[in-house]
Image 1 (tube, helix red, strand yellow):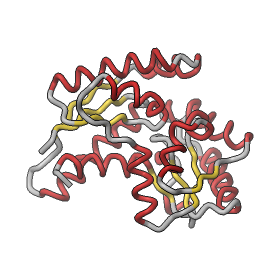
Image 2 (cartoon, one colour):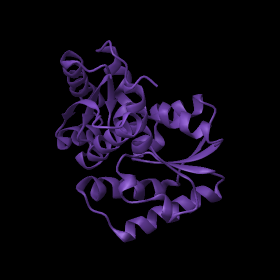
Image 3 (tube, helix red, strand yellow):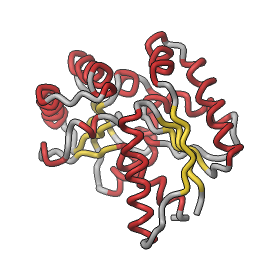
Image 4 (cartoon, helix red, strand yellow):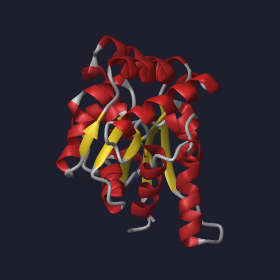
Length: 230
């Protein structure tokens, strides 16, 4: 079994889901007392969020690259960055290590195509929704991507940072997300990517008839598959 190097803590609430999903998947595949071989480095998210807000992506890349190097030195066979937004600096991190990064957007694109999806809505932080680093992975796979209008982008982003990253789950915010999901459906989206690892804490598939693709679930399960050689 390969050892998974997790860069977590962005936020820790969603990292808990990664740890649980990876181990559940390993147990389901191998049975018995099997669990995943994991090295977890959990950051202080306040530091990373400060660099995000100030636009200092180079500093973010430096911090996460140093962590990735430590995980490789400790024996990790590949890296899993437990957040969508920080894949913005995945290319810089990859330059500092010799082991691969399992990219969250590529894993998600693969899952969408397997299910015959051609046009998809994208929810996430404002960075994920509006910048190219994430969407280009989807577009390169042949997918068409739609995002909320400007007001929707701001509301989705606000709820992530002001509530979900702080562990706050509010019914009113769920309703806001469901309204935005309906808008994406009306814009032609056949499915919606929950492209922030916290969104799945708020919105579940049973809340809507629009197919939801939770990146936390997809990424974590793919990590387990890679760990056992699939």
